[in-house]
Structure formats: structure tokens, C-alpha cells
Image (cartoon, rainbow over all chains, first blue to last red; front, side, top):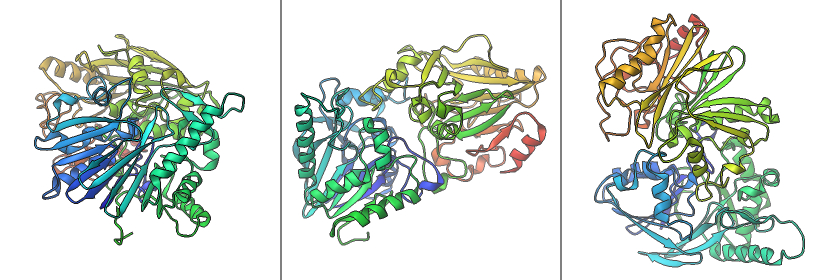
Length: 304
Length: 293
């Protein structure tokens, strides 16, 4: 199994000169195992992946797209993914099952008038939508997939992909597990002390335990590190973590390499270098820390 | 009146080294009037950069005001709106003009875009700055000393598209994107929208359009529809042999990349580059802006 990173940015894509090394496209990661191609999230990086797939001789024509959640930065690459305009491509799309709207309706409503000139019905590839539940596990060819809930507004999924001896864990959007509990459509708890908060605090502790289980022993953990500690104090309600919170989860899970992910759109390459250096200095021995960079190949024993 | 390009790309933002000079952000142009009025044309991801720049001034303290003219609500013209810090500072005021769709008013479309399933903002009610939404008036209207005219480019009920013309002290800037001339009537009307400028002695209107747009010269044929998919809107360069000297081009197709215009267009266009000033108030400004490419 190997993976390629096509998009690392959170919130919105950025096209500035100071983000060239880590990249400005929003989240998208490609995972290959045997002839299976699994795509994690459909941010603008997915456009580049689509162009590469079209050019690749013998590329798999059946693709799996695992969506963590449908906030804009995780779906805006979808209609620019070239294979969906060609017959002969099959795309299985997986996402969180919700009572409010089906996954298909959520994608269909983002496309089409008045927001986009192409509707779902205009696409020529064969699309199938699969709704999955928190904690669900399934197999995609040689890849075993497990899920857990991340602490993010309107809920989001985190994925673990295992094939052979390789494990990649993808947690692009999650807040920390001590101050704010996000639920469907609203914040359930803001960390205010008081009687009756026991259930919320327990729910957060439980969610943290599940995320650490999901990441246990991973070769690569791609984890939300949008904020610095100072920024988090100002924006706890956006559902994103800090680099040090990402490192704490990676340490608790015994991860081999932590890749800081979902970079803040204002964060320059130089600032990311500094964030990485600080986390490397603080990391326990044996934990490698880097920031996810667009174009990087993740392959055990391969180029780093 | 001074114009600055913050996003010139169509469809989807294109980060990367190959797109630095013209820029990879989607549509956004700011206009400053002589009295400091701030007008913003469209809010693609270029608006995120504009917003970051504005945070250095009144907008940081909640005393900022801007008027936004939205041509239509497709992602590449609208999706940047909720991201900059300036829309989350209480006290700032955004007056937003744009077309209502048969599927919902401009305000409803924005609220849907911010729904919990698509955005952590979870709805327009959670945006701290004051927003007011206005349909584009049929008659010209004033933003302080600036005169704004709107013209419906497309009557498609579900996705109406408008063009704008902003005038100040005898100068005009015309902003036309996503034009697809389905019939001669719309073509002639669009030409008139820009050409009237000359007739009324407004010299050298700058047309900012989507790969097609300069209407200031008479005698053109109706451009053919775009090849990939009819209905997307947008025209090709090929039909645009003689643009007016002050025409600038925006809404670059990503494949037309990069740091140089396509061969067929190199001789005719002055593509805008992000962050550069185009002065509409004096002739040397035009000359220098054209010579930079």
C-alpha cells in the first residue's frame, strides 16, 4: 500500500507564493493497494488526482471515495475530477449517514443551479452512494477500512485504512476532546463548568478513546493541526485542533509518523516549518513529525 | 477610481507555482472610488485575500463598510464570501447586490451555502458582520460618488447572471463574466452596455470579461459557444480578434494556464495579474499597466 497527498489545506484553497512547498489545495489523499484506488476527501487536490488518473495507463476504472464530511473544503474538488465526465468510470462514494439529508442529496444540492452549472444527473461516470455509520468497518478489496467519529461541527468521520502491514489513519478535521462537544447542527457543550456536564465530558472522553484506538500503531497519521495554541484559544468553536494536540494523540496511539494536516489557509511554508520544528522538539522518541506536503508519496521503505 | 484584481481564475482555484503570476484565485475585483468608497465585484476565493488585506484597516475594528456586486452565485463567484475575518467582526457592514434565483433569493442561497452540512458557520445567523441583501435595481444607482449599472446577461431563471458597469467622473469599468451569447439580442445588448460608454464620451472603458468580453468594438460576430459543454457559459478567444486596447481578461481557464496566455491570445490580451492596480483615472496608468505584460 502507498499513498499520495494531493491536498493539505483546510477551510479554503490558497494560491499564494508562500505556500508552494506544503501546497494550497484543500484535502485529498489517494491510497493505492494492489489495483484498488481509494480517495480520501474531495478537496481541490482531487482535480490534480483526476488529471493524473486520466493520463495513467491502466489506471483502475473503479474508484472509492471516502468522505469525512461535506464541508466545502472537502467537496469542492469533486466536480473538477475529470473521470466523472467519462463513461466507463465507476465511483463509489462513502460518507456519514445522517437523518437530515442523504449523502447523495447533499452532493446533488451542492452541484446544480444556482450554485454550480453541472448537476449530478449530467455526470457520465457511474456513481454509487453508500452511507456508513460511526464505528462502521468494511473492506475495499485488500484494504480494511474502519471509522470513528471526529469532534467537528455537524459530526465528521475519521478513517483507518489497513492493507498488509501498512496503516494510514486520516483525521483531517477534529477539535480537541476537552472543551467543546460538537453535535448535529449545534454545539452541545462549550466546556462551561457546572452540574450536569458529566455526560458531555464523558462523551468527549469516549470519542478521544475511539480516535486513539483508530490511530493505534499507524504508520502515518494525518491529523488536523489547523491552529496554533494561541489561535485555538480564540476559535474553539470551529472544531479544529492544534499541532500539539495532534502530537499528543499520536503519542497516545503509538504512531510511527505524524503528519500535521489541514493547514490553516493563512499559514505560510516558513510558519509550518517552525510548527514542525517545535513539535519535533517536544515529541517522544520514536515519533516522527512532519507537515503534510502536496505531492508527497507515503511508502514504507520508499522516499520520505 | 482604482481597480485591483484579487482573483482572475474561473471554475476552481489553482494553487501552484505555474499560476503565480496571473494568480490562481477565483473571481474578485475591488474598486476604490475617489472618496474611498469600496466596491467589490464578486467573491470568489480572491475575496479571502482581499479580506486579509482589509483587516489592516477599519474592518479590523468593526467600522468597515463595503458594497458587493455579485454577478451570479456559482462557486467561483460566491464561495469565498464567508471565509475572511472581516465578515466575522461585528460592526462591519456588507451591502450585497446580486440576482435572486428562481430557487431562492440571494440571501437564501447564501444561507444554504452556510448550512451545517456544508459549513461550520451553520447559517447566516451566525455571521457577525451585518449583511444586507439587495436585488440589482433596474435603474442605475449610486454608491456615494460611484454610479453602478447592472444588466442581466442571462435570463436563466435558476442561475441569472448579471454584468456591471461602474462609472465615476467620466470613466467606466465594465465587468462581464460567464457570458454566453445565446442569441443576437443578448449580444447586441451586451455590446451596447459597454459601447454606450464611448457614445457618452466616457473614454476607454475597461472590460473585464471571461475570455471574451470586449464589446467596445463594433462589427464582431457572435462568439461560438464553448466547446466542452454547451450551457456552461463562456466564450473562446478564437472569435475575439480585435479587442479594444484597454481590455483586460480575467476568468482564465486553468488549462490555459499558467504564466503565459495561450498562443492564440497572446497578441490580443492584457491579462490581469493578481494584486496589480489598474488605474482608470489617467492615461499613463493604462499605458503602464499594459506594458507590464
